[in-house]
Image (cartoon, rainbow, N blue to C red):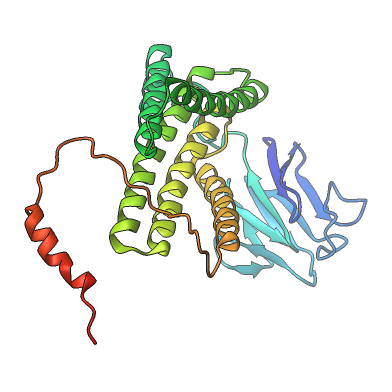
Length: 314
């Protein structure tokens, strides 16, 4: 007779318990005389017996109130032959029957397998992205100001952005050091700088469309959507480098955190809006074009079309 493994998943406990047994009869229940004790109020004193008979393992219900439920059959049974991997419900506790030779999932690699992360983790690539992002933010600051910007102002803007990226990347590198024992600071810095760069076109697109439609909600909606998607991507990749959280859980956690952050930001923005403001602050900022755009009409046509604005009827 070979050993068997009983996996126990309690209803309100995340860690699973494993019991390795080598006897031909195993009693399971809530009573203290059992071989496996389950502190579940829906489990009977002696709920079931797993027994080795004629070269196979069977589970026998002990005429209990809630019975023995077999998941693959979707019903309760009095007696059934068990196969390695079968799930059994006793009360609200989930039990899995396993033989020692039962296959286990493939081993996960701690080494980065994402090609994008591998590429962006190179120090030369990461710091090139940082330099390019800071240059773009300096140019954006220059175009947003109607007055001539001083070199000190451009440098200050870039330094502030760099400090934010440095703190964010440093925090995730510290998390990686605690969990994976690897800081991977360049990878975190490259991810953060790349996503900070994506914030710029998202902001520009939202501002331009808000100006075109002349609607506050258009810019607000697009800004929340594009910033939210970018932040979800950044947070998910930070988690990928710093932790061993599964892919699905990373995206779910990133989405929930982003939804909360965006909701708080939008609520704060709407709360500060006034119904009437004699000196309103315009939400859309016009920037000089990055490249030449041909005029669709001559100036005289524009003046002619604009005369109706100043026409008053009696």
